[in-house]
Image 1 (tube, rainbow, N blue to C red):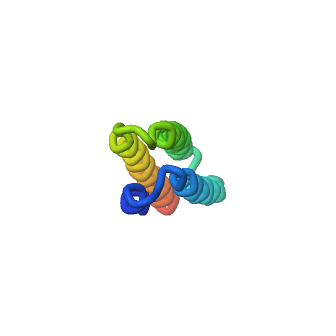
Image 2 (cartoon, one colour; image 1 turned 90 degrees about the horizontal axis):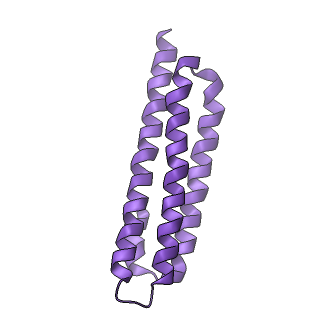
Length: 113
């Protein structure tokens, strides 16, 4: 969400720092989920793992979009490439929420067992 506010205000050179911060936060989230996995029922592991894989793809898309935005920072198309980068960041945020929902569902299921 912070990227949506910051991206239009910073130079293209600063995009890397924003994406690194997002990557760091994503690694933290994934590490926390990995810590929780042994506590979750075995039949709920697959949805959580699938959500994690989607996040890896989303992060790769964000990095690719960032590189395009940086590469085209001196062209009239910068706004379009920035928009693409923000779309990738939004997809990553939504899929992060989906991961959290999958973990919450598994935790509820574990409590019901």
